[in-house]
Length: 447
Image (cartoon, rainbow, N blue to C red; front, top):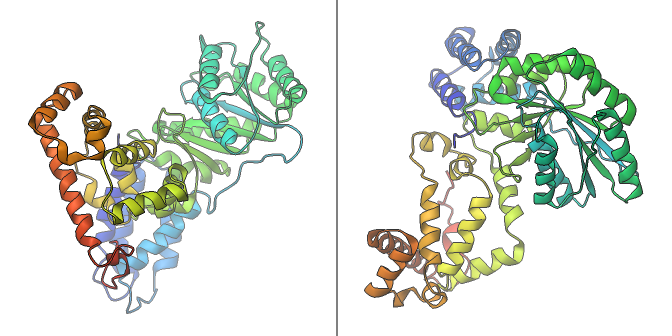
């Protein structure tokens, strides 16, 4: 899986290196870097007018800035560009509008193939986790299997789906809101029909649904891989139905980033969510400042911490820490950690959130299949073997190898690596069983 905006990040880093070593930012010594950044933006399919304004704004703020003793010109221009990127994408996070009482209606629109129906399922899952009582409405009466797809998504997230045999999408949407009220549900997500391109018939239907159900929130879902075509369709939809927010899908693919950087400036509507894969838990609230940090290769520690907190509760974390300190961390614990890490997303995307690691891992061959192999090996062990690895003799290892479909070398390598990890933890805790002493070392740094 590609790291989000990997190519754009690499090009930004290359362009910003050109200004390092200068004592002061002047029009002369930043012109080359900004010319390169302008080229980077256009290559990423950023709208021409948006790119020009961005460079003009950065130039105005950068020229003549004194470089303090504690920072370099490269750091200063990076900070200015970071601020402008965040502003370009909306400045601050915009919350979804949800009613505290009564039924909240969310209308979801977009072109066919944008990931609209899948997004409805993801949003239902997210809102359900926030204790909302959700109903999905199948108002796409044209695309073959659209209703069945939504029903399957509803089953996966344990949310009811409202549909009807007739083809009147407006009435289906209207009836679903009534049904939600009658059945004690407080959130209705309406999946509407899309087309391969913007047409009058689709716009008329979406407009009619909006006028009848009067949604609290209308969201436009767009495939971020389609670049300026996405921005153009966003503009056409907005001119007709005046939606409230944008959802960018397929950011885990080979997207150049132009859509994310252009769309807010063109339609003046906030990006509210980004979708990073097909899994129903791969939906993120959009934070412009965090995205700017990722694009510049500076990581995103806050989002990483939030992902970790979603998978770990305080009690689990304390138990793991205690086992590590007491050298009782076994293969069963290791298997639990692997499963939790997998739930957080691709390993490369997780590592990319750590400041300083983004550029280091860009060419690294991180094989997600290794997780599968390790899981298979551990799952082929008996409970006793997982808890007491020292009993893993030659015969046991051969049985584990056959049972996991791996080689004996794979099994030996994992056991050796695990033993080495235990030795390191034992050394770190040799100073009296206190919390890891290196964490309090003034020379210890995370970068």
